[in-house]
Amino acid sequence: MSYEKLDALPPLREVIANHGLAAQKRLGQNFLLDLNLTRKIARCAGDLSQGTVFEVGPGPGGLTRALLLEGAASVIAIEKDPRCQAALAEINEASEGRLQVIEADALTIDIASMGDAPRRVVANLPYNVATPLLIGWLKQAEAVQSMTLMFQKEVAERIVAAPGESGYSRLSVLSNWRCDTRFELVLPPRAFTPPPKVDSAVVTLIPLAEPRFPCRLEDMETVTAAAFGQRRKMLRRSLKTLGVDTEALLEKTGIDPTARAETLTVEQFAALAREYRALKGA
Image (cartoon, helix red, strand yellow):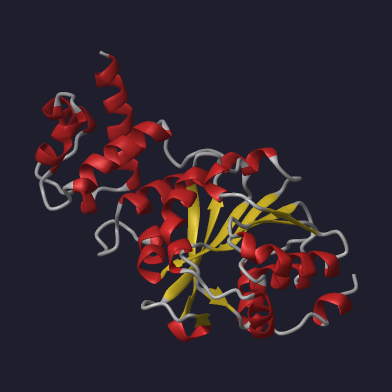
């Protein structure tokens, strides 16, 4: 596969200047311009030579180029900022048919219905919609082979956190119930234009063939929202917002009523979710 046309594209700083692509805070934009770093991120996603890679928020196309240079067979880039279309069109022309650019809000896109499998998501996510996007992809995890995603470092640490760790949260439970998770690398603010006020980090999530423990996702979402919504309180208090008999819920699952959310395992949350469904239907 020839990459001469991609290698001949102008430096990203020049692209930004030529197309007037100053990053906009309202869109959560922080552009990653170092092609060595973007190629490192692309390699974290593994073999891209089969199926489809989805990228969200490509901006001027730094990660887009890296994905193509690392051998991606097909990239679908979803960008809502119309200012970026001309810059992405230049990459499209150099990609020899391997890039498709869609101007849309990624929150409205059903990736399970697009592209050939295996589907991978590789993205420097806009910070302001990163968590809702991840939750949406977890809901259709059976259609995705892997997700290699950049978040604020604090959010990335939550995704991989284990029970009892400071970052353990609702996002930890949902992610590790549905996927194997792996912390990849940290990127300092200076790697971006403009530099954000916090470090960023890349994590990879590999969806399991089936959830780690049986329960419904909507019930897991409800139970974890209640438990972590008042995380300083004991479960016998925080779970009262569920609207079921809290004492019965905790007794049937064998969970200490005085425990707090951050001490429960993913398996225990799945048990709560199943019992919540049973009590709700009773």
